[in-house]
Image (cartoon, rainbow, N blue to C red; front, side):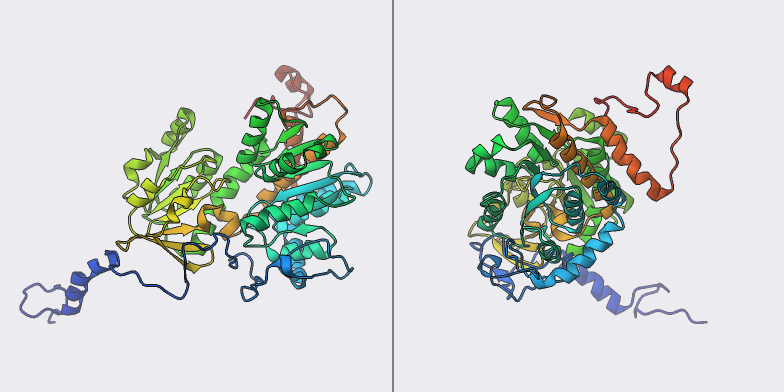
Length: 508
């Protein structure tokens, strides 16, 4: 049988046909930078606000056609109340379905509600909150209400609000002031509307990032005379609280939920391990296998991101300032580098530090064409986005929360969520793991609200270990898990109470 020879004039039986040779000659063209910057219809001026409203991949009911600011709308819920400001109150039915789905994956909060049928540990509590407004937050808010609290709420992130969920909360009677795509002015206006209301004085604060606490200190410091405590769940917000405490300006007790074991070891680690892939996939449709990634920071968030990307076949580098975390990264099989050493070669840059200027303009200038840049830390200061808002660079919005920033030579980087939190801005996060965090927040509020005078001074505290263990125990039935109980002899040998706590407060 004659062997196929698709290339005349050659002697090899397996020589490439002409069309394959032509493709091989041309394929390098795909890797070259474009030499001409095209301005699409989606292109926007560099002077435009960074807070333009775009629909989220996670928020399917967003109406991008309605450009009217919610602040300019006159809306009422079915009960006639207008004490809220959301994108569209008519989306409430969709939001209620989201909340009902989330309830199925939040067993501990639902267990607290059952307990609330007999007791109301938050009766009389007036909680002002500033968190991500998602279906999971809605379950927390409705649980706090079932426990006896009154709540007013704003968003801690201009992109993370699910509009349909905010509408559902407003329809249920919660004063909610938030929508996806707020401007900076809108953001502070919403917080002020939660705080500055006639006839209502908050006595508890639930914060995520410290902006609400900062606003009250700045505008309404006298309110702290009636506030019993602050519950804070982010690295950024906790850092701010410790700064206030060190300066002697913290005038109420505060609970550092971020460093609770049930927050650090679950939300930060397991949530980010799953949501980093979700956020990147939804925004870029990229394949992770073989991609070179640098993760800045190897705390719990960084550990989760690295584990997920490594499992998908990515080549992962880590930057770290802490020698203990750095050693953990090395022992987990990651190459520890300085960002400058790998910035020209990596395909993805992910920040997970909670610090500022981790990725500078110098780094951005040296990145290769089509490098993806995103932030998984809470603060939006990790990537120096402000340095990119200059006349010589062109911004193109290519899809929701995805911008191409184009250099004069045609090089472009892919910036996600304008440097804000990737997973909550661009995707969703696993409900079950948020149940753990939300339950920890609820118990921290109950603890501070009911604490006898003198138990907590004007300082920052960790949630008692016994409560951490209680939060974990409420989630075990989901897995049909059965705890082993110590015998009296074993408990005596270890010097423990049979019912816990099983670890000292300093154990991390």
